[in-house]
Amino acid sequence: MNSAPSKNIVIVGGGITGLSTAFYLQNELRAKDLPWTITLLESNQQLGGKIQTIVRDGYIMERGPDSFLSRKPSATQLVRDVGLESDLVRNEVGQAYILRHGQLLPIPEGAVMGVPTEIKPFVTTALLSPIGKMRAAADLLLPASKILEEEDQSVGTFFRQRLGNEVVENIIEPLLSGVYAGNIDQMSLMTTFPQFAQMGREHRSLILGMKSSRPKKQAHQKPVGIFQTLKSGLSSLVNALEEQLTEVTVKKGISVEKIVRDRNQYTLSLQNGERLTADSVILTTPHGLTRKILGNPDFLKPLHDRPTSVATAILAYPQEAITLDKEGTGFLVPRSEEEYSITACTWTNKKWPHTAPPGKTLLRCYVGRANEEEIVDLDDSEIVDAVIQDIKKLSNITGEPEFSYVTRWRRAMPQFVPGHKMWYSNVQKQIRTQYPGLFLAGSSYAGSGIPDCIDQGKNTVTDVIDYVSSISLSTAL
Image 1 (cartoon, rainbow, N blue to C red):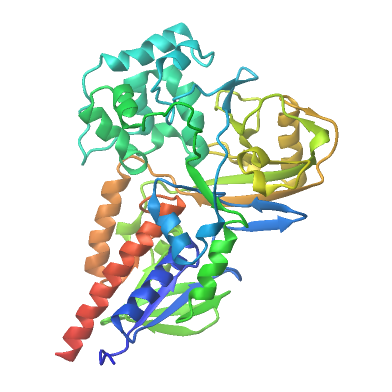
Image 2: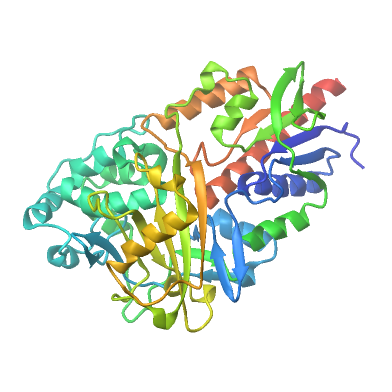
């Protein structure tokens, strides 16, 4: 039996970052035979953070993220590690559309985040004028991008320089705003899409670089979806993680008000009056809350003060009550379509057939983005009415939805502005100096997707074990 002295590690936040951190930390302590204790604190009565699944009448509906990118392996690996691999399912590949002058126009085939990799679909698309197409083609002639790895600029600036304004406004902006709910002219390239900067340097032409990086299509090969989810909803991953945290003390409905460093330990003051002592603390909370818990130190002042608020409306219809004029999986709405409230709409039962019973149509509509957040504060019925009115402009609806759900995510979408990567690097240096043994992870820092959060959690496990091992050794000496 390992004779190393017991140490206490506290994880604050029970979203996917905190849960994956606790899971992999527990596994490592078990493998290394370390007698340290782990406590996970979550302010809500349920774990999972933004991952929330509703199961009703044969429908499987997500209030938060509905899937994760399969090319980032950490989420798929976590699913395997908790024994849910057989429940993995990929999205159906179908045509997606962009709203332009009130018409749903197909996103050109071969477009990757709006960057063309096939010429013919871009030549024929109605999303761009002839001048816009010529400007995009200039990417083939422009010199290589000179942006260095340690530099940064906005996503909008980068793509405008390479492909011109029309491609950005009509294709790239609705695609990327749909992911980040942000303003692409205030979005960090090196934090969100560093691979494009690298392509611009290495291949000169962004179009040629993207084309060479795509896997070659085999004749008659059916396209494979790039997203994955779980048949019974993403909350099944949360439930499996909670069940398997057998050596972690999980406390729900308890928030942390303050953390103070006292010599080589930390004292956590909880809302219920309790105090916990920890040798190491992992904060997976949103950055604004993290800063408050630590007493608002100057070095934690963010580059962007206000995460964006968004909302989603889920609508369930009998199939005969709504006719979708286009075959596909959904559409995106650019900022230029000002008469529309929605920013995107997923025809969920088309993209994920397992989410609705036969004969039913399930829609998920999104509202709110940077500088357009007022609608999020409306009543549920007002949001649903606004969404239905928008859909009626594009589809034939003859009846009322069987039911609807509105979910608000207030100040929940981090905005990674240019300089974020350098800011985060400085934050990490300051934390190591002023708060040794305290670690930050989560959607506010190194990417907000599920795999990004899991990666941060796994990396933190290594850092925590190294740190606690070092203080255990110094204590023994």
